[in-house]
Length: 607
Image (tube, rainbow, N blue to C red):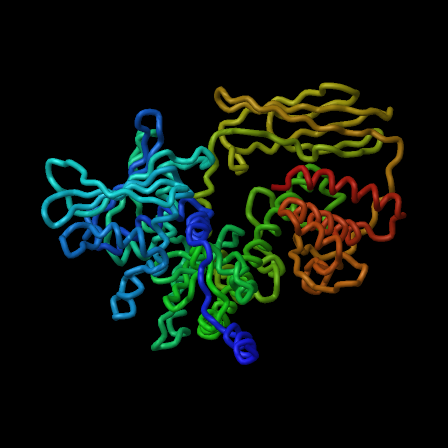
């Protein structure tokens, strides 16, 4: 007895794992697929693996019960020795896929390997009918029921046996929302993109409920295909990369595939790739690695093993090259955004200065030579120093006579659309005068000069108008202070436009400050200088005629969250610098008044 007792612990020190409750294990496997669309994709993959060239997915309703049918023209279910579909093997070899054995023997182009795809019908409906023809011209059918460990095989009476396989799922679960034919089409187009392309299978989705039919076309990516990345992958490697450079969008993502089937919608779900350039939002496309090991239950993820580490190593050179391409794209977009911001700010300032008294803002050089275009100053040709080389050729071409003639042709004004009185608001001394001008424009804000009739009137207040029925009128104030409203009506054929101006007649005026710069420089450009932690927001560089903006200031960081907020912030910095430069030596309260004035008229025209 002592000897037997001594051997007992040794006999229990090792052994093999076994399933204690087989039906419970099958239930867990059958319910492991959380995405019903993925279950449909697995049924389609079974058809592709069987060599099908035509696959029809039908969604409908019969006798008050919703159903889904997948029918193909493939090789059908493997037959037994009697020439009948071997449904017994299918039902009794869960987790023992014949495809895994075929792969071990060198067969390619197969996707399944776990032998659990058919059980995923539990996440779709209540019953499954699997139909396939035998060698003797008879058709057989296997019936599975959700939650039932039994299966039933019967002969299906048909007039003619059809090649291929039919999977019919009845009693679609009520919890599946928006399970439409269109959604199935879009999902399969992405999920099986390369499998469809490589197999040449034609897949149609017939939605009888919605009375619509869809053809599943492999998803096409947008943007510029990055051909230059092909040399960054191992020459003898199995990894395939198809990447496209796009404008920035959070929706842009690179999907991970294995042998043509998507296993992750976004590569950044893996910690090893949760970094730029994959997270940049500039790249979309696919990475396909056939050697990855999938999670058996859902097949929607990969196992973090040596195969995944191998993928990370093989993608390292490509990642470095892609990061440089994305950085170049970001710089180009930043420069383009800077040009757009500068154009908006300068356009708004020009509109504001058109509405303000010319003699008080003469430093901007906007009121000289009206009616013709002034060549742009060198400081306006670029926003940041890096852009100066790129814009030099454009500036040179823009000053040539040929380009000017072409530009004038395309800028020929259309019909009258609006009118503005310049200045819109002004202050004059009692007994003084103010020259007013009516600026007529078409819908594209181009000046209109032909076939116009002008009518000037004083709507309210004292004073008189001298005009000859043209676009220029002179207002003469009385000897008493007051507020006067002037209106002009411009007519072109049947089009009539009106505008108003407000003139304040004051007993005395503020002394006019001398301009900060006697030279006419034009509107400045701007550039960025990152000085995080420093309190200054902007400075004016008189040498280069640039507003230098501190893009490290917390206010700039806050404003950069949205385009319009950033545009208003930069516009206010421009107004601050231009007022400081244009009105030197006046008291702070008067300086603030000027700042409010310029900001008010500028922000109205921001776009």
